[in-house]
Length: 337
Image (cartoon, rainbow, N blue to C red; front, side):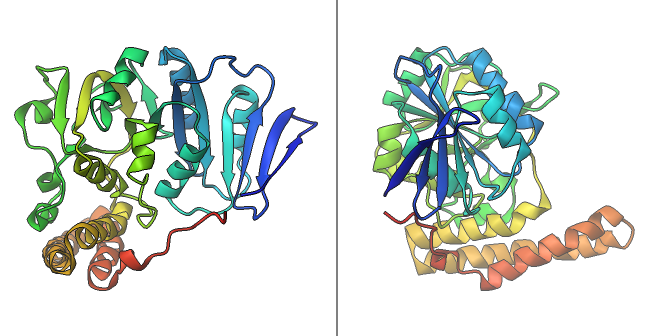
């Protein structure tokens, strides 16, 4: 990969432009920490707003070790928020991706630029609520992925730990994919670390060398499903994933019907990749039953409810994906070396 380094006279930034224009990396030279970062905080954005600024301020408030911030922006165009970030947080490293090739792609590009021994993968609409210390992140030397405990804007616990979809029947309902243990359901934890299959990928701590050794996020998964797929490969490497109950963060992201087609693609791809064609057929059968039932219920409710009527197109798209999608044929977007 060939970089052309230059100084932006207006901003004072040092810019590395990849010659094939896949992305541009911006680093500010003045006031960079003299100490090498222990932690690289990677945030993938797409048309970000005020929530990104709140996220960055929470890092300033709660990270207690040398760290760097890497923003991998998938907007693929002008973004006033990103422009403002370079002024408000001058030490932030900004990667402007020329295309929106997905959440996995954005994280992997950020990890390529990371200097820290550890990675914090954080959603742009998440805010830390508790300190991150060197002692905390060094626990990932023992574990694979360390996930935080999520709260909503009202301070209410959110259950985000799930079970690997190794049994297709788990995909029939949302609750079937969630961790059903009483402490995980209630949020009343008796232990500091809780072994889990995976947690939603809005706040992950992982060693950079482990992230690289397992191949990072699978870029064939555009959105939704990349978290449990990465966690599964980490588990196959011999390390367990866990919740650190002392790591708290706020994340208002919730369920949306628009997610359903992506969720279908992720489940089908995971089944085919890790268990073969027969498992894929079983997964499609379960998903077909799920969305056929869901479509029937939604159509019935739409007779009296506009809200249910709005859901119909998303359910239809998900059902169509069950029948026709081949996500394992999707070619990852590759930066030319």
